[in-house]
Length: 304
Image (cartoon, rainbow, N blue to C red; front, side, top):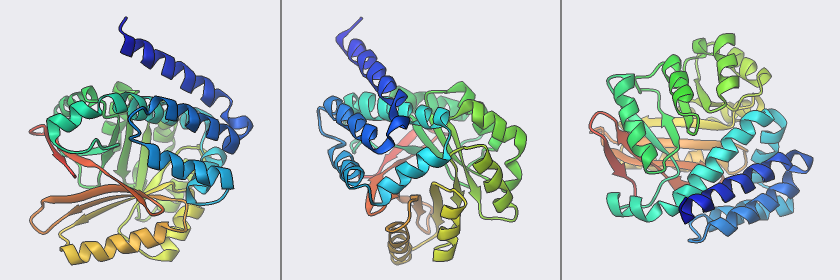
């Protein structure tokens, strides 16, 4: 067994042990977990994000702190730990070691998430997933215009238990059977479209203690306040056909909305010609770039 494998096994064991006692004192023990993660982040890739979260946990106030507390209050321990294990171990630790490889291959910074935008079949998409998974990517986002049905996403969740799937879906697809499957899988996170029936879908997901979000283009304060009240942790925003000026206006508004609300935004912008210009994840005033994978030709577009 190589030195890197031994390091990864040691890191995995340490993370799982730390997660086991988080519930006793969420804020205090999470601080200890973040200190542990820092010891493995030898290239300081995640230093800024870790420091921001540590500061809020120490002060017990702020958007990141509120998100953490909501997670412990509303999401089952099983799902919370599964998502944390994947994010901490696969993304922060292994992804940290693969950063140079990905940067050299694609000429940009390593993202912490990607999203497939098009594919003609589940089998074709799986080929693309296997390719990016081999590079250390374990967080995928499926926007509203993707080919998928909820059934397809749940199939992928079963096939790839070490990956997390954020996906847009209709309220009609959130039923008891699918909620029970998501409770077993733990790695499929629905973004319910803001349509008729969304309140009932949110209520079922909340009773199931699942992590979920909303897919909406609304930038109304009342809508975001309602989403937070109904338990949404993230908002997926797919902006298509916008000019630079229009996008800047919407992006500024979204930043303003999340500055004082415990919710993430997952923003994707294509201009009038359909070219992907910017994709990013935002929490409070912090943003991280993403990539888009065109699954039909396995072409990755890095956002620098």
